[in-house]
Length: 213
Image (cartoon, rainbow, N blue to C red; front, side):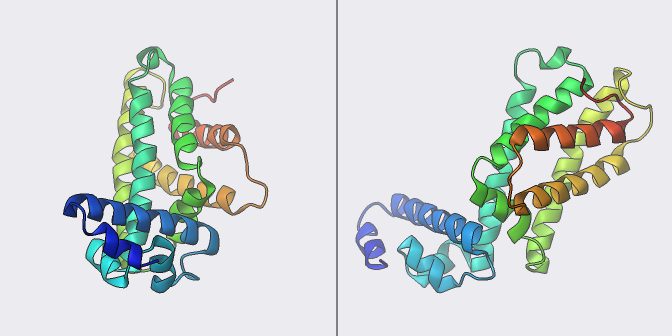
């Protein structure tokens, strides 16, 4: 299958590299998300992607770099879904309970749409290395900033307890990831709306707000 890459390289360089990157990401999603990251070798990924090991090293450095790139792509999709929901009609007038539920609906729907991506994002990245841990830590910090802004908005509107919620949000972000990992591991997959409801109730409790009725 690696011969296919040699043929593709005869085209425009940028297009060939983009295609190779997508082939590697697709292969990683399938193998890491079904077989498991630790059970998948660099050779397995390259064979499935139809590229040589040299291409993997050129584009992502290592198998670990490919894992980080896939996690980054899925998590970015989740963030963009929440950002889009913030701009949706009626969001500014929503109560904190409805607003949080809509944000989690958007996020959970985006990151669980493909079970393979969910497994990579919430399970396969755990305990891989210090580099991957640091990558996930940076994402948790970004989520903390995003959700702290929502908490401050709720305080200003009198919908949450008037105090600094940053520590609460940091705990909540960690708990959200633990719950997502739990649901991803389960043999019976929970429906997205079930997961979203659970996360919403958790968030509102930490904020001192009332859950959705």
